[in-house]
Image (tube, rainbow, N blue to C red; front, side, top):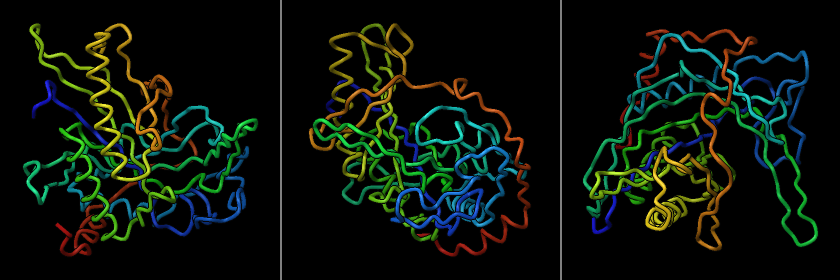
Length: 314
């Protein structure tokens, strides 16, 4: 590399699973229905309503975990992730924290043109959670109104979190391409980014060698990318921006002003823009969901899924 720094990238991929109903209720997950017509007391969080787990969502998640070479614990549980957002009607999201459905996997990537050497990208975890609703912002002059559609609330999501093993935007795009190919082959998602079935959050920072040793720039999480090409462009821009910021301001991870931030990607202007400071896991106040029993996965279930996969695309 000719750049005076090393790029460090980790990806969080949110995949909507191909189930006919939501994760904890019987509402339809079909895309394109009129706003707020596919909701019920459970998915909009009415007092006294109780969730019931979608078995098919668990099966599709296990199918993905096996294909990603993950370890699948026998015991997993559901947790409440507390945060406020207008399209999160309950004020919390049912997710998984310390005991996810699967962990410690890997996905092999390569480039047919030899831009980078083949490598394994490690998977930290692939856990199940429910999706939030959708905020629609009207930014026309004089209006600036926001509307909320809760049809998506409660749709099953599989969040696949990688280690920061990718060293270039090209590697990140190759990882996403290979992952999408695998998910489509497995039949677990249609991966349609235009409909929000596959969404990517990219974490990036730089390691810069200086006379005083190697420094790391503050981590930035980039959102609002609606194509793999946009991911590649956003990461290339962000690497240059972080290096320029370090040269001008000297910001380093953990130092003054060196906290993690979230930035959006403006496709029209081809730039990232700051959104907010990033929360830590303690800010979400995780605790086990009291309305859902833990999930036990047997060796026989995993063996049955493994036998059903056949030969994978790679």
